[in-house]
Amino acid sequence: MSVPLKRVQVFDTRDPDELAAVLSELFGQACLDLRARNAKFHCRMSYLALGDVRIIHGEYETGLKVRFPDFNTLVGSPAPLKGAGTHDVGGRQVAVSKDHGVVLSPGGVTVHFGPQFEHLSLAVGPAALTRKLAAIVGDLRLGPLRFDPSVIASAPQAKRLERLVRFVANEFDDPSAPMPPAMQSDLQEAMMTSFLLANANTYSALLLSNPAAAAPWQVRRAEEFIEANFDQPITIEALAAATNVSTRSLFLSFKAGRGCSPMDFVKRVRLGRAWQKLSKPGAETSVTAVAFECGFGNPGHFARDYRHRFGERPSETLRRGRGGW
Image (cartoon, rainbow, N blue to C red; front, side, top):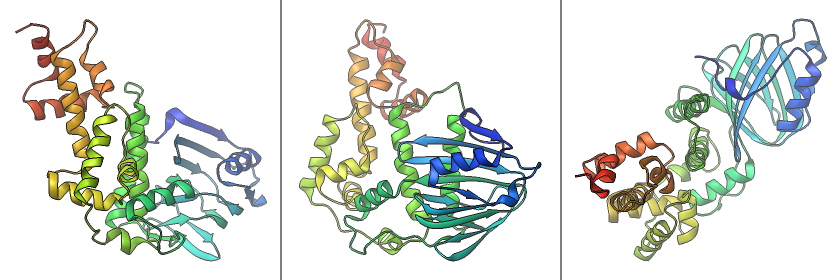
């Protein structure tokens, strides 16, 4: 794997104090083991911030031990890209290797990386993840969200999260295609959902259970919300809040009554509005501008979906709207 997040590198240092300062800023007070203070110490770290989510890439040439008395976030790390280590999470020892990852939770945490250690991890704000959980399951009837610190790296959901994080990291490394805010929002939500599903927690059974269906009026209210906000970033959580139902129940009812998911319905509405704009264009109308105006973050994906929906390219609709046919 090529080194991700090259365009957002935070630092490349041989100074343990500099590393401690950056780690303290990201995760709470960090205390480095003094044994790491030698001429061979070398660390490279980069991170990408997307709202309440951060993707972190780190490389450490020599063994490194860092104690966090009050770790302040959640970090999920699948199998390391290189190396191995042992972490202490809330008093529990967790080995990290090619087969096992770890979830670091708020509280007392000590991370111990072996030599030549490299990782790509996902950090999520606890409050944001709890809000995401509440939107999915409807309420927090089982109490606080707590994670098992040990992760089986080969588990299907863990692999899915790893692929998603790598995809997002690589997308942001592409300077030719800046990512629009709407797409960033969608990816942030997707990574939080995947984090909840990939890492065993107190709500895992509820997350995987079958939800109750939403009422027909709640589905109609969701449709009205989508129609009114088609040009804004729309998340499944926003739809759940607007209809006062869990995201899983809303998804189930859309599938049963509309034959599609809520987010597929969002795409249908946006494509319909795009068709209207292209069919009756103004002097400055362009396909790219219409794509962004209707909430599509990637013009290429927009063109593909548009052709699948209407049987022609958006440029053909625009040309016909201008009397070109």
